[in-house]
Amino acid sequence: MRYKDAGVDIDKAGRFIKILTAEIKSKREGFGRPLTEIGHYSGLIDLDYFSLAITTDGVGTKILVANELQKWDTIGIDCVAMNVNDLIAIGATPLALVDYIAIGKTDEEYIFLNTDKGVVKEPFDRLAREIGKGLNEGAKISNISIVGGESAIIPDIVKGIDLAGTAVGVVDKDSIINGQKIRPGDSIIAIGSTGVHSNGFTLVRKIINDSDYTYYDLLPDGDKTIGEELLIPTKIYSEVIDIIKEVRVNGLLHITGSGLLNLKRITKYGFDIYDPLEPQPIFKFLESVGCVDKEEMYRTFNMGMGFMMIVPPGEEKKILDRIDCKIIGKVTERPGIRVNLKDKEYGRYIYL
Image 1 (tube, rainbow, N blue to C red):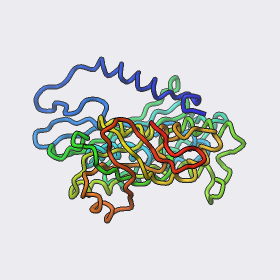
Image 2: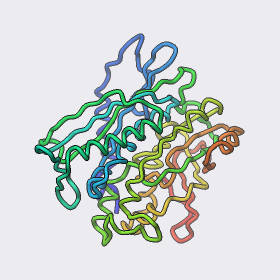
Image 3: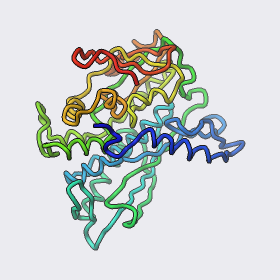
Image 4: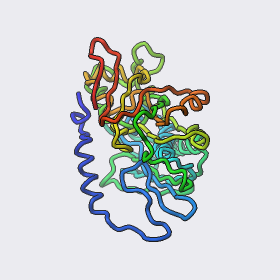
């Protein structure tokens, strides 16, 4: 099974964005001019001595799993995390977020939510309260404020709910980390994820729905149900903010949709991932049950590696001594991504 088989073609999505952004040519001059091209994790705006970083993202179809389990108190954390981590990935300190909640059909007391098994009816107040709790927790973890937002009831467009946000942060102009200083020989340090995070859920849901499993079944050899495992919120990588103030870091990566292909976003050089982190059992379960190729897994999911730092030789120990992380590879002169699976049955390497 491939992500494309579930209805998401990342190559076609990339082509869509390329065509769309080619039409966006207007740029402000002077104070407030853009400092980055469209395509990095965050956009930067020049404010003389510092830059304002802006990013936007949502929870995606992970919401449908929350609907299925009737549990929405963590998707707010996901919303904050997906935005805050993108700010951190350019060296910015996150400050604030506004959220956007799109709502479909409602009546006096209830909201009608889509699940993969059909439509369910949930109390409006309960849903709002749980989403709010998650947003608050995400803000607390990342030390930001939620300063506003927007809600829209648009039943002709949305069938259920959608949750997204836009976040802002600041970074000194001399401290922007955009990958331009990356050189062959730099080390790649990975920080673990908490699981699937908030990407690839269209494929996840297809795998579960086409299998003999349900979200209520225990994950094999685990102590959580499949649904509980999938709803573990996206990790917020706030620890990186302090590290980049004291350690020379040439590149930062939030491993989101497209998995390890995110490495290609920040440099023309290649990557040898010779000792990747071990993926959590949920990934092995999805791979096995969905008959998903290794290449497809690594180009769709984070595979246990939610954030990466690329540092020049000699800086590694300063990071390894401070947080739970691991050197997983190095930057190479030759373009492309090579991953050493250490899997004798499948084959030693895959190339992305």
